[in-house]
Image (cartoon, rainbow, N blue to C red; front, side, top):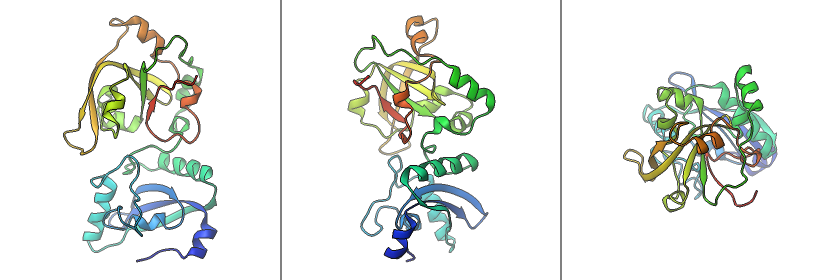
Length: 254
C-alpha cells in the first residue's frame, strides 16, 4: 500500500488534499491532515489503517465518501489524490480546506469547512449578517437553547426548508440534548429557526444518528422568544475560529 515515509511526513507538516473520482474527473472530497492521512481514504473502510481510526467525527461506515471509494475500487480503479498546500500549521490548513470546500460542488464532505460562517457569500449576505444584532444572553436560563449550524446547499437540497435541514441526521448524545428547551437553527451565524417541544429519536435511515420532531416558534405563537433570538447573530463565542462541529450547546460561561 502506498504511503509517505517518516522523513516525508516530517517535511510535509499539515496539508490540504482533494480526492478525485477517475471515472468522471470530479472532486468528491476535500480534507486536511498530516502524516499518511490522505492514503487512509483508499482503504475499503477507514477504520483500520495502521491500527488507527480515520473516521470523521460525524461520519460512519455508510457515508457517501466511503461508498464512493468502494465503488471506485470495485471498478478496478484508484482514487486520484492531489495535495494543494503543504508545510502548513493546523490553523492554516483549516482555512485552506474551508476555502476549497466552498469552491467545489457535490462534495461528500458532511460538514462545511471550519468557520463556515465566514465562508463564501454574496455581498448582500455579508452586509446583512454583519449588521445583525447579537442576541442578548442576559436573563437566559440554564439549558435554554442548543444551536445547530446548517449549510445553504443542504437547505436548497431540501426545497428551502430550514426545518427539514436542521432536524437531522445528527450524531449526538440523546440524554444531553433532551435537557435543552429550544433548538436554534443557524445559517451564516444568523438564527433562522427556533423549535420547542423537541423530541429526539433514532434516525430511521442512519444508524447511530438522531433526528428531532419539534414545533416551530413564530412571531404569533411566542413573540417573546421569537424576538429574543430570531434573525439575531450568534454571540462571538459560538463563532470562534476552529469550531467545526455543527452542534453547539449553551455554555454556563458568559
